[in-house]
Length: 220
Picture (tube, rainbow, N blue to C red):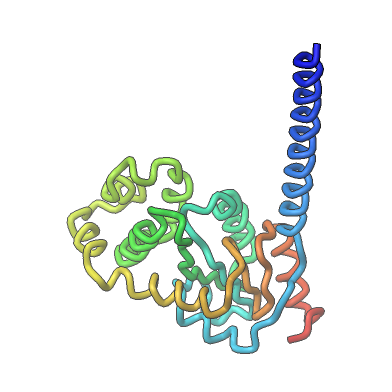
């Protein structure tokens, strides 16, 4: 019947459309994955001024500075966090790590999480808080910030919570956001190695770039 033929045609069209959508999605994911393993794509002449916007960890006299623009709700930030930190430990005093807060507008708990990291820094538990925030990314908003503090080894949770409520815990967060906007940071994580920008890119990409910068193979 005509009705059956129309139904068959509609079904065929639906199958074709679905296949096209799946193929396109796979292509987009492939391109996205490839872009995250790119080499340096830009250079900032004034990159040394970025150091004043971040939390600096390690040897301040290190010849190489790894600046990370990060968001604690960013899934790729969480995925790369531990491998990058292990890489930094292996490199020792030759690389200084600098964390610049770059919370994205669509992430509801990114700014409070950044403030929690700032307050953990005051109590000498910044690295531990980073580990806890990324490991508990799915729990942001479900547990109190004092719970995260305890997991990070902070025993004085009263002082910690007063810090989170205080405006001072947002100063560096706001300045990091302003810097990210001024630089048009394409997403998180974005890394800058002595001025050379790497959007995305895991530890292997960073290791190669750091090595090239250290050996003078990349010119400013």
